Length: 263
Length: 327
Image (cartoon, rainbow over all chains, first blue to last red; front, top):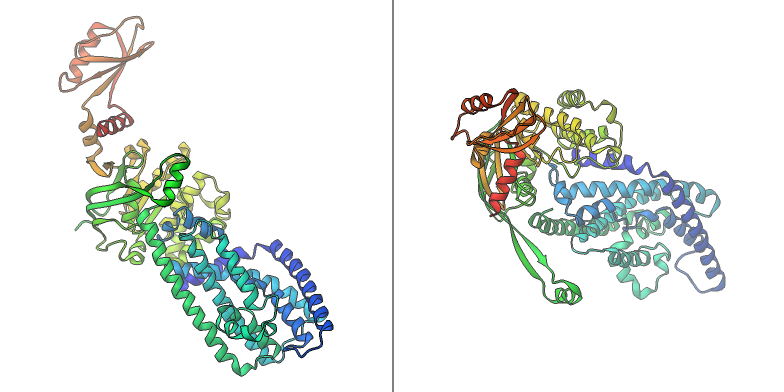
C-alpha cells in the first residue's frame, strides 16, 4: 500500500496549493445556498399540504449539499486526459505499481482536499448564521462522517471510470454533462430526495448517486436512524465494487489500444 | 546467459489512411483504410551485463519501439524477449523494478512538484531503503550539480536541468539496466558533456548495462563500444564503431598545411576534397597507398608545414550508411 499512500499524500500536498479556488468556491456556494434557501422558503410558505420534510430540515439539507458539493463525481483530470489522448499513458507503466491504483489514489486526493477546504468554512458560517442545524446526535455525526467517506470513495470510483472513457472518446465533455444532470437530480444537490415524487423513489434508491449526498445528509439530520447505517453502506459498497471493477476492465482494454498502437 | 535477449522481434502498427479533401473525409466516415507499418521487422540481438550499446538509425527506424518493448510498456506482435530472465510485458511490475528508463522527449518527474518531492515519491514507489536513497541522491547531486535545482518545480526547469534531474531520478533505485532514449536531445554542449560523463561513469563503476538511442554522433563516439544500426525495422549492422566505419568506407583523410598557398596539389592515389588558403584536404584509400608513402611523396613535391591523418567524421559515415540502406 505504501506506494499508493505516497501518491495520495503527494497529490494532497499539490491540491492544498489551490487556496484561491477554495475561496472562490466558498463564495459561489454561499450565494447558491442563499438562493436555494429562499426558493424553498417561498415554496413552503405558499403551499400547505403535508410534506415529507420540515422547512428547517430542507434548509439544513441544502446547506450540507453546498458544503459537500465537490463530492459529486465530475472532476476530470486534465493531466490524465492529456496523457490518454497523446498516448503518454504508456509511459506511466514504467513504474512498478498498478496503474488503476495509482490513478485511484490520485483522484481520491484530488477530491478529498478541495472538498474539505470548501466545506469547513461553509459549516463554520452556516451553522451559527444560516440555519444549518448541528448533527442530530453524536452518533448521527459519526454515521454522517462514515457515510460521507464511503460517498467520497464511490465518487472517486465513478470519476476514475469517466476519465478512463477518454481512451475511446475524443471529447468526453458531452458524457460528463450528461452525468452531471443525473448527479444533480439523483444525489439531492438541489432537490432533497424525499421531496421527489413517490413513483420515482425505487429508482432513486437503486441509483448510485444517492450514496454521495442523500444518505449521509439524512443520517446527519436524524431522518435516517443510525442503526440503518450498515444497510445503507452496503448499497454504497456494492456500487463502489461495481465501478472499481468496471474501471479495471476499461483500463485494461484501453491500455491494450495504447500498448498495441504505441505512443 | 545474456542479460537481454531479443529474437525475431516483430511489431506492426496500423495507421489510418484518409483520402484527401472533403469527399475523402466523408469516405473515411463509412470505410477506413488501414495501412500496416512494420516498425520492427525481425530484430535479433543480445546484450551481456555491463555493456554500453548505442542504437542508431534514422527517425522512424524502430529504435524507440525497441526500447519500449524492452522496458515492458509495449507488447510486440511476435518474437521472444527476455530481460534478466523475464518477459518484460508479461511480468511488467517485477521487470520495471530493476530498470531505469529516460525518455528525452518526456519527463518522468511530476510536473507540479519540486524535484526533491518527486524523488521522495519515487523512494516510496520503489520502496528504496533510506540509506540507499541518501547515498544515491548525494552522489547525483554532486556529480550533476543539482543542489540549486532540488526545490524548483519541474515545470520551471530548463531542458538541460530537467534532463539532469530525470537522470538522477532514474538512478535512485539502483537499476541494473538503463534505457536512455535520446538523452541529449536539444541540450547545449555543457549539459551534453555532463550527461555523457555520468552515463559513462554509471556504466564503468557500477556495471550497469546501458542501451542508448541517439542521433548525436558525439554521444556514440565518446560512449559506445558497440553500435547497433537499425533501419526500417531491421538490424543493418551490429558491431564496434571501427567495424561500422570499415563497413561503409575504408577511406582516410590527409590534411596538409602547405608553406605556399598558391600551389595546386595533386596525386594519382589521392583525391582533393577542398583547399582553403594553406590548408588542403585529401581523401585516399589505405589499401592502395600506405600513409607513409603518400606523405613522403607529397612532402617531396611541396614544402609542408604540418600534416595529420584522420577518419572521416562519423556523421558522414552514418549519412552514407542510411543513404545506402535506402537504395
